[in-house]
Image (cartoon, rainbow, N blue to C red):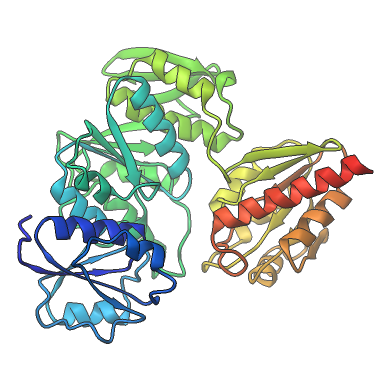
Length: 454
């Protein structure tokens, strides 16, 4: 992509927007960056911008579109926003930061997407690849923007990227050598028109692949399994319920990787340190990806036995008077909450709620009736969740997370699990899911200190 002396507009100055702007500037483009937020809110990000990048902050009204040759957007920018519609009407091409980075990077891409488990799978896979001696850059929707690798002249042997539907809205040529779709359940329906559009955006991760590429799919998820008939990449599968011809699977409580008739035992399920059936699926996906990359079974097994998971996803916080507290703040959709509820045989006191994303909460109803001892609802969505669970009596509404955790502790008894798995976004009460999870841990620590002091 030759952008020297081209006028390029970057919309959105979060981390990926800053990296995109810097890469464009380094490439000789004349860069203008715009954001709806003002200079005060963006001061830290502005400091990271190269000198010479023009800024249009506090809205987009002052942006002159007449001379713009290309627009690059951050994932947080609404694809159907009025400003982007203005840009389209001018005939200006719009691409995502992922597409921009792909144009500059030469190393093979590995793209991991799905509704749930992306961060866990991407992180674990990165550790497996590194343990197997591969020089890998891990980024995308997790950690570093992909343009950061391009800014460093693409020195890695592999680029491993967590990919969201937001990033797929603006791709054209993006073609990972290995793509993986972990699962697809309803999410972000406040941003996407409907479930069909959401599935289509997940599909985009493999639409440009050819016969020399690989598409990894979850055979235990009906939607992803049905995608096996699409795309030109070679299909590789993972399943915890049945053996697959090529891919990763479970046999008699052991994980195996099989490819073209050659089979390797990786480890026992008892070696996993992660909680939950969904984390077996995430581990299998990591094995399928790493096995395709030639990582030895021994290296994969070592990582699996050591990997403790990521913060805010089924994270054990502490045990107080026999009650276990689990932080699953990253469970921001119904599918994630369902998987988390399926992970425990103990009585559960569930804390759920937050900012609604257009979700249908009814899929949680049977599991809550079967496994939840008591339900505590918080946030803007609490009334909608309560309505969806009509008939479930053991529930209350709390005005804050602290009240909810305190109420859960007071109602709990030895052997119970207090699970924060909101099934909602966090923005009504917190900065993000990480803030919500950290607040939960602080409250639990405070309760634990009080219990000791008594």
